[in-house]
Length: 449
Ligand code: B12
Image (cartoon, protein in one colour):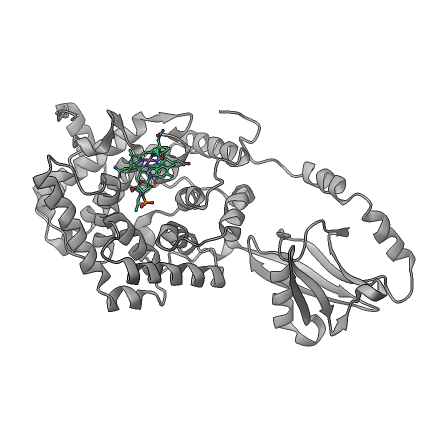
């Protein structure tokens, strides 16, 4: 067990000078937004089967405003089923994440939270954690990361918790912030977010000034501990950095410095390029901070209002004998098929289409009612910026400003334009490389950590 340490007086003085509602955000700017695409695309394409364990993903989709209705529905359904069937077995942190995800950003799932009295059930689980600490040498049933998640959800969704227990158990010296003597940045960060919420609720809770001071000191000390685990812009490691950033946004002025912000983003971009975030949960835990959000924004009505950065606009045309053009707006991370659907919604006659499910995803079988046929050796060819695609409509992720086309191949009469199309298709990958090499790389991409 780690012995409690006293804060030096100077430290206390310094911390009490930090304003209680600091908010220095360090987020990815519009130009570098494409550096986040690998994370977003991976989250959108992953195969989700694990119910409550994907609550983190749903929470992030909603918090940062990534609109994908079918995925949202699928995740929310799975989470609700798990809550219904395993309610008693769920840990405090699991239920808390479920509530945060289902209740994020004003959506219809909020009904489920209230109808099922989930917040009061979470209050019981939180109380059980405290009771366990009282009888088991200060050890909770789970861990302090989960205790903090539970406190955060209770605080955001007006649940009940005892301020006395909070001030007693969340002191920065508590052994549960450590694993084998190592300060757990993830745990500290989650506690900072929970304690900041508690502090911000002071009026509602009629908190005494001395209690408020205590809580402010806790968050400031924890934020200091997080900063002391900083290395090349990361805190703890790459997987704790997203939540550490959130904690620093709300409790310190660390990101007031542009240099600190750039250093963190550079190292994070480098790690993205090295595929560090291959798991949806890893991406889900870092994305909110990179997009300037914290878990404290979960109950803001406008928390998912992020249209400027998340919508892209693309041109789409159907070429048969004549060409029909349109321009549509879709969410970032959309695939060719989403564009076809958006165009179809705009003009059913010109852009209607059918697909058939195959082992490689949806295969376009007809456009404008014109069916391609293997026996006639005809097919619908997909192009972007004049280049035939090397992926299908369900996989090809479109970019802002893309010029997408679908053409009946071969056209009724062979034309020079078509021949150049055939030439263009001879080495699409090489061309993609040339095109990509002209794109300004993400900052930090070539700088190993
Ligand atoms: C608490 C914790 C632990 C505790 C878990 C037991 C306990 N006392 O509750 C301890 C200290 C034992 C632990 C161990 C490990 N952990 Co840990 N852990 C966490 C932490 C802080 C919170 C997890 C949690 O409760 N989540 C909330 C609940 C609701 O979700 P949950 O899915 O039900 O949580 C369970 C799992 O997360 C599981 N678990 C915990 N750590 C790990 C790691 C891996 C790889 C797996 C598969 C599962 C797992 O234990 C949780 C409680 O049952 C996270 C931080 C984070 N950002 O998520 C790191 C974190 C998940 N752990 C991590 C790691 C690396 C490990 C270890 C592999 C470390 C090691 N070198 O041995 C081991 C796991 C080894 C193994 N047996 O498979 C990394 C994972 C990174 C990654 N990309 O995979 C994280 C993100 C920390 C970090 N920033 O590096 N961990």
